[in-house]
Image (tube, rainbow, N blue to C red; front, top):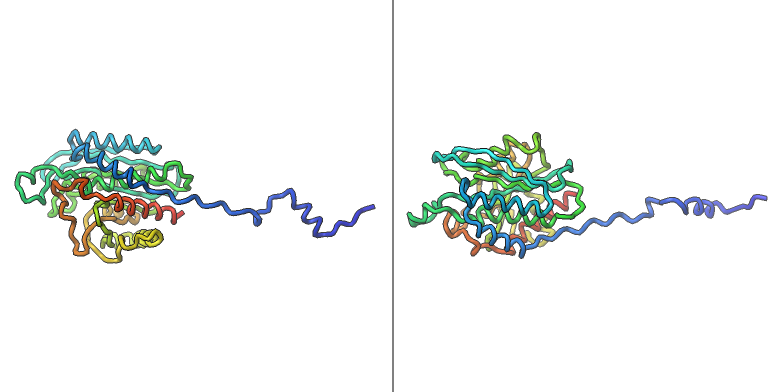
Length: 316
């Protein structure tokens, strides 16, 4: 005799040993990593203690080694790119670009960059004796370095499906306003000789003077022209975090900075996060001996670092 099992009962019995995809819970998204502003400020002090990283000096060598060591401690693959260049005033200087790669095998990649060198003379000083001394470069150089290192540390151990390239650019600030291409010497070299060959991130964000007390980051004009979509992503992420007042929808610049050469050379959108007043001025300690940790804010470092982490999280 064949027992008559109701059809619905039979269907449930048959499916009981099988995985039912539409009944399974979706995998929870990993929480957004937190940028540690206290650690970042400690690193600012460490950067400052090493001395002005003017290319070709012992301070530059020590600072570069410190960046490499810090990247390796965050478990990044590190590649150094070395060359030399002649400055506008006739000096032959070594150039050392440093690249830290998170998830180097990932095909989808994002570029975060900052210059790590110091200007060799404080030309904005009024005292002729001080003009001949190097700029400490704690904000104009160091703050971008520290935000990149802080983001790298925040992402360490995250199971992210994309790669992030942290590019520390040398010889950005040894230039003169009358010759725009006298700036960003390390960047120009990297853009012409990218690592790896044919390197094409989805987009990039460059950091310059991103640590000052009370800093805001309006829309730099060249960034809007070359990377308007990236600017929108930054502002959207800032709004989500409640930081929108720090990224006002007002124009500044244009500013000749690393992002121009990266964007044009790599053929990808690269936006510049740089502090200027709404009148288009840099802070009063810019290119002076007063560019020290005295003017650095933990809050500003946190806002910039956390906003860019949010940008990456929203992408994926």
